[in-house]
Length: 263
Image (cartoon, rainbow, N blue to C red; front, side):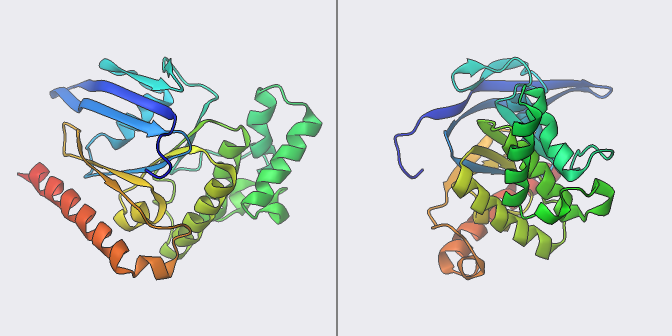
């Protein structure tokens, strides 16, 4: 991690998460210990069912650990909070509100005046390059544009931690690459602690300062990989030997866990 020592923003201590199902108990996470620094960009990868989204939901306060604790900025997570913003793959926009009204929504919930909310919403809409679409409705936008609105809305309320669950997973390759670049540009400008789930190893290496590799269920941290490549990471970076070495190492680790799950 560049710039050590740094303040810990997210701390996960010996977290176990079990679910009761019709087929018996399932252990989704088993003994997770992790610290994420303030303003750090972390990606998490691993085979399907390894507990990536479960871990995100625990940090978001949408679920509680069976045992262990999750802390954000030194306070134990006991439910959702405004210091944590979540961006899902499914966009989660209000279809009856315009782009600007979607971004204003959380600001007004925080008690911001109409004038202040309007100015802040405009600022973040411009940040994601959608100024000309601020009066459009979600049905009039492409998938990539909807996801930009979701990112603008999440950033506008100034969360300390931004939790992103495969936000670009449903997009075509060109749009995904464009939004990766925009997200990094926004992160460099605004700074947030980012916890980003992806199945795409190349995406993880493009975005992250550190990559958490999860084992097959029950989910554990198999390895943490430092990505010491300068930003911004463009197409030239993606074809470099350093990038390819990191990508291939992570892919080998994930594939090994995937094969172990199939046995």
